[in-house]
Length: 426
Image 1 (cartoon, helix red, strand yellow):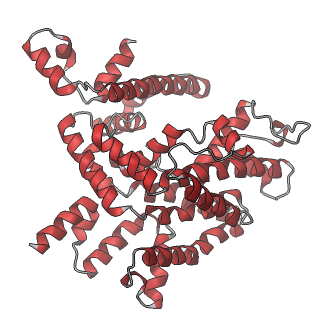
Image 2 (tube, rainbow, N blue to C red):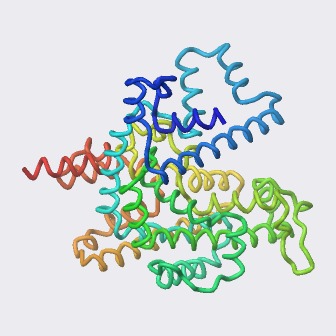
Image 3 (cartoon, rainbow, N blue to C red):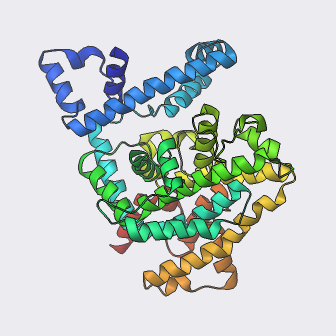
């Protein structure tokens, strides 16, 4: 319990030792500055801290099974030969995994940054759902099967139109949505937090900023779209496991191995269904969903992106790193195994995203967005499909400079760009 309490205190960026528990004036001042009186935010912190402790315990169990030592013991072993900077980097990596970087950033600064990023989200992403229309193609790429792209797209569009703005949707759930709920891959809090984390790097939003952010992602359809794609990915995972358990592809054994399975692990019941009570099957399905519906996390971010000090710079960038990790990295891996056809959905993504851009600009009544030569339009399609990888950040900065903006401000993120625009306007 003390570890959880300590973790909650650290989660609120407090680093003043036991002064927080003193009954004198200094202790009262520390509590006023660092502790949150909001019950909902405090409970969220409590839950995060419990989850963090559970994850740390699980990591220690897995570490003992594989290496015979806990994570802390491995860090101490690494300290023997490591330099000072190497020790700091190792601890930063562990802290990043537990979202503990940057705890010395004061709550006041965090709230201001959270409000700035929320405002940027609302200003930049009213049509953000058009960027997520890439999801059916990344799912097809992960499945190594292009045949269900339009079915998955149809599910997403239908659900957004019928459910996104309904306060309490009564729409019937099919077997795949029920299975996704059973597996936990479409938990509402997970989707909301996932979108918040994607567009609010390194910050736990609270109060008005959190409410505004959650409402915004529900109203622009992105929350429902994300849920629908996770349902589609759950269905895809089941079909993928069944298909390759039958060995229908020369890569089948490798595909199953990547999910921690062998064909002997895949047992079908009389109804032809997988054994969803099998923990290995559950883990495989969850891993498949995570790799199909690309969303950033501490592992896919570069280290500095997990530090809230750089939240304004990392804003809108985390997805690029996650896409490079899950999609472009896998494309290279499949090429090494001679599976070149796996890249077909990604190549199809270029005209696909060009088309969605045209629809978006039409919805915005933005004629200029559809103008440009063939080369410029093609390059925009490649960029929108994510195929430029991390170099996209520099390509966008160059474009900003070419259109009268600042190369440096673009590299520093959307907030810096807006400040630069206002400065030039005055």
